[in-house]
Amino acid sequence: MTKADIVTEVYEKVGLSKKEASEIVEFVLDTIKNTLKSGQTVKLAGFGNFVVRQKGKRKGRNPKTGEEIEITPRKVVTFKPSMVFKGYVGTGNSFPAEKAAPAGVTAEHK
Amino acid sequence: MTKAELIEHVSEKVDGLSKKQTEVVINTIFDSIKRALSEGDKIEIRGFGSFKIRNRRQREGRNPKSGEPVRVPAKRVPFFKAGKEMKELVDS
Image (cartoon, rainbow over all chains, first blue to last red; front, side):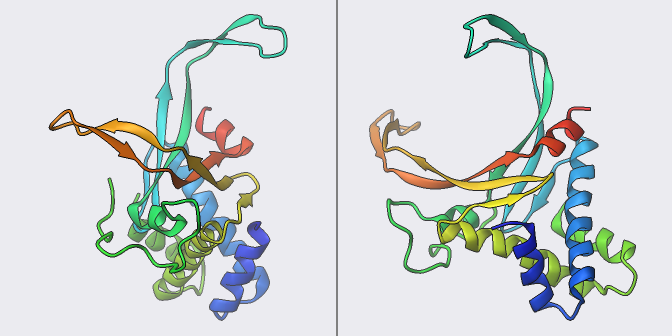
């Protein structure tokens, strides 16, 4: 699945042209990106939280040459899925027959 | 930023898009990602990132209260990997 499929779903659901749907999806994603750029967390209830985390410097290794290198401090984006989202993808080795979240899992996990 | 704030921002910036429509658009985006993963599919959004399912093996855990060992069953969890553009933007 790609962005084009998401745009199609939005287009089918809302009374917009394909071009408008595409622009709005793009704008939503850009808004999330720019919010994260400013260091702010994006919390989407029922989906999950995107958080920017500061990583310190650490030692790494070039896997090809085995050479030791220093990994510089950096900021990274992490995603913490909500309990609802986790419920969707299932807990066992098979996919849940029911696509809904398990009963009792309604609270948003912080 | 919360979902409500995201809806507010998008409906203000896009001409002719009501708050209600914006809400439907945003819910549709994230519902389609959830549905794709629940069907075992993965999603790649260029410049943003990709969502996949990661399998977590069964492991031995411990009840933090009683110290009693417990078995944590194998499970699937949603996993997000930031795209190149997103990585560079956040670290700039």
